Every structure is written in C-alpha cells, then in structure tokens.
Image (cartoon, rainbow, N blue to C red; front, side, top):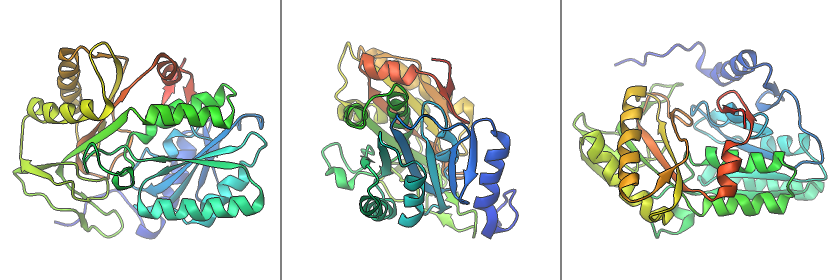
Length: 334
C-alpha cells in the first residue's frame, strides 16, 4: 500500500516541520542555524544550560520540549538519524556560559558518536560541558549492561527534572547529581502492534504480523525479543508493570511517576485504558502515583503501541517535575 502522509518534498520535510514548530509556538521557540531550536527568551548566563539532540520523526521529542523549565536547545538531525557532531557543537557554542552546559545523549550508536565528537570540539574550544547518557530501556533485561540499553521516552521526564534544577540556579554538578539519581530509578518498556513507515521513502520499519505484538521493540523498529500473540490492555500492562517495578525497585509505600507515551497511532482512548490498568496494578502493590501523563511525548511516526515509563520519585524530584515549565509540549504552572 502506498504511503499516505501530508508531506511535500521528502528532502525538505525536516526544515518545514521545524519552521512550523517555530511559527506555531513563536512565543516559546525559534530556529537558528537551520537545525537548532532554542528558547525564544534565553535564560540568564549564570544558570546551567541543558542541550539535547536527536533525529526527527519522533515529534514532539526532542525540539518540542525547548523552553522555560526544560531544554535550552535541541539539535535536529535527519529522519531517524542523529545530527552530526559539528552541528551539536554549534549548539554548545551558542550556549557557552560560565555556569556550564549539560548535554543529554540518548544511548544509540549514532547519538553517542555525535556526542563524542561534539564534546571533543567543546574541550578544544574551552567550553565547559558535562554529559548525561539516557539508557533506561529495560527490554534487554533488568540486569543488562547499561551500554546495551537504549534511550527511550524516559528522556523527557529526565529533561524536565534536570531543566527545573537548572532553572533554580543549581550548579552543574548539582544538576547532574539530581539527574543521575532520577535516572537510577527510571525505566521504560515499549510495546508495538504495528510498525511505522519512513516518511522519506515509505519503507516499513520492522515487521509484525496482524495478530502479533512485540514487547520491547525499539523506536526505530529494532527487535525486542518479545513477540507474542495480541493480548488485552490489562494483560499487556500486567506483563510490563511487573518488569518495570522490578527494574525501578519500587516497593509498597513508594511514590512513582507513570507515563503512557503513545507511539504515534495509538488513540487517547487506548492510552487512558492502559494508564488505568497500570495505576490499578501499582496500587495493588501499595505504590502511590503523582499526577501522570497519557499522551504522545516521543513517537515513531504512525507506529501503533506505547512506551510505559515508570520512575520512583523522591520529594525533590516530584517538586522538580511539578515546577513551572513553558515549552510547546510540556506546560505547567508550578
């Protein structure tokens, strides 16, 4: 079946999408140097800056979370491809400041390569940068080597926690400590029902039979080893919650953040039904939830499915998650 998407020239879709973002949210963001989304109103130089980057095709991530209380800049690559190291370095140059910069890198080969190049260039230029690597996907196994864990949608609440800490004027080491503590109790697991198509060429990303679903499929169609026959919402959620609770080490009496992140073609109805099931599973284990999210944060075009993101939250991190934010796709009054 031919691809059906509202696009123009495949070669210009990233530029057109970023232009649309800046036009729709001109009070929050602007595009500079072609592929770098920055805040419309920069924050003071005496506060730590937070920079993220990644391939396009996952909207609203990452550029949809630039703004007060979250990222200071997001560097966009091509579809499903990280921007090159020199482009990431351009963003670091733009945000160079005495307080320093934190670079948020998802654990994918292309992203890691670009980050290493950008960090080398920053070191030569005397720009103070420290990196945090997001590797919260538990599909490889709860005890898997962190280097084998991909960075998934958990990067968004992590960005919220660290961005709020930056906004409060904390030092670069304090922000990193908070981010690493949150990440140590953060886990994501995905499930897919239908694969996506690449918006530039229509190629299917991954394969799934009509009566199958896969727990653990990556956000670029990578296999997760969990192919099985279709299950109900309750049955699917039960499998996922059990693994995520073990990974986050949540226990009765703990407080948690739960996010159902739609992959692109999952309806709001389905997301809310799955959130309900997960909340009940967690309540049955004596775990209480702060206000959560059932929405699209990081998508994979028209992939059907969702990522379940679960994090144990301490009072400090809960306050940072609730702190003021004003970005195109995450807004709260604090």
